[in-house]
Each structure stands twice: as structure tokens, then as C-alpha cells.
Length: 268
Image (cartoon, rainbow, N blue to C red; front, side):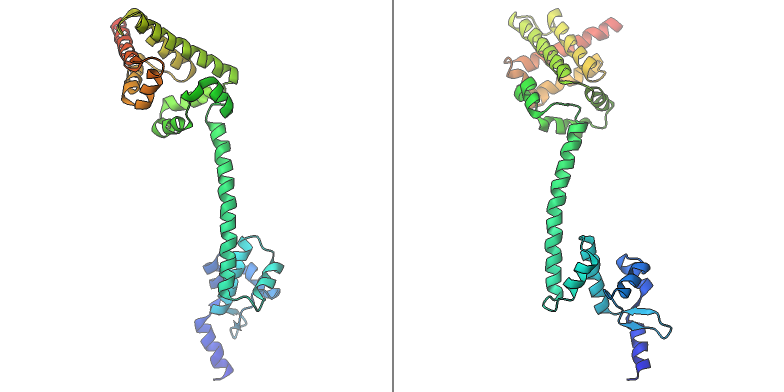
């Protein structure tokens, strides 16, 4: 086989510098640089002097690309690739181990970023200790996450996030005090035997609505009616009230409905 025949065969089986650059996502300038420093030297040339890369050249270049993405310096890569005791399989194992290590680092970083984002976006600028101090076991991050999933696109949710993002610990203490006072009003009416349709029970329901309206989001009596239904439909909401006083969840729900009916009658 003549030298010219070899060149012709290589030209048909190898890739040009432009083809290699497109296939591996590197620039032609980078390939020229790798050639100049002896890192990846193409095995052939066309009669016109253009570089031609064989399969073996591409394999070496692929290792270079991976090592570079892992942050290795070109000098380090040269030493790794020119080590006669290391084969292609060993390079792949090393690269995989390095990538897995980076994945672990990235997962930790993502977790840290997520926590920072949650703290920034949650609207509650309190530490977990402060949350427990104010709300006891009634505050659950799981509830907050679920609420965002269910209502995150609603105007009420956006309004609540906008308002609460500015609250201080003192503001939250006032929120808690008002909430406790509202619950106490319900309990007092229940203990005195007042029906859920009584003025006292309806006034407690209105107090509850205004608490939400003032601190979190705009809520009409009709909107509040739907919220009251959740107090008996969702066992977790039910438990919150039942832990205060047995039968309270249904009582609060009925009082909210009565208050909404009262408001509708006043408007007609």
C-alpha cells in the first residue's frame, strides 16, 4: 500500500477538525491548541495539510474533555493520559468516581441553596426554635409545603406571602395572640352552651375571618365558608381544633357558615 493510498483511506475514515469540534462540543481553536502542546495530536493530514482525527484520537480527546470538565489542568491531564500503566477502562473508572464525588458535592450545595430559598420565600422569618416557641406543635413545615403545592398559584397565597415576608418575631407573636383569643371566644361560647348559630359564635367566626383578612389575605364571608368546610374535611385541621376542645371543629365550621349567612342577609 502506497503512502498516498494510506492518506486516501484515512481521509475516508477519519474526521476533520471541524467535524470533531461539532461532535464533541469544543472549538476549533481549542483543538489547534491541544495539537500545538501535544495533548491531542491528530494522526493524519490531508494532502492539503488539514488535520484528520482517528477513532483513537477521538477516544483520547473524549478523556481530555471529561477531565477538563472535572477541573483538571492540562498538565495533569497529560500526565494521566500518558501513564502507560493506565488503560481506557481505568480512565473511565477514575472519571466516574470523580463525577460521583462532584454529584455528592452538588447535592449538598443544592440542599443548602434550597434551605436558603425556603427561608427567604416561606414568609416566616423565624428560626425553628422560635416557631416552636410561638406555635408549639401546631406549626408543621409539611403543612406549609402542602399548602404551597395546593394553593401556590392562587392570589390568596401570593398575597399571604407578600404580607408575611415583612413580619418580625413580634408581629408573629401578635398573630398568635389574636389566634388564641379567637379560639378562646369559640371555647367560651361552646362551654356556655351557645349554639353555633348564636350571636356569640357568629361573632367569634367573624373575628376569625378578620384575623385572616388582616394578617394574611383578603377573605370574604363566602370564601371563609369554604375554609370552614376544610376544618371538618381534613383530619389534620380537625385535630387542631379537637385538641383544644372536643367537638370544636364542627362547631367552628357551623359558626362560620352561620356568619356567612348573616353577612349575606345583611347585604340583601
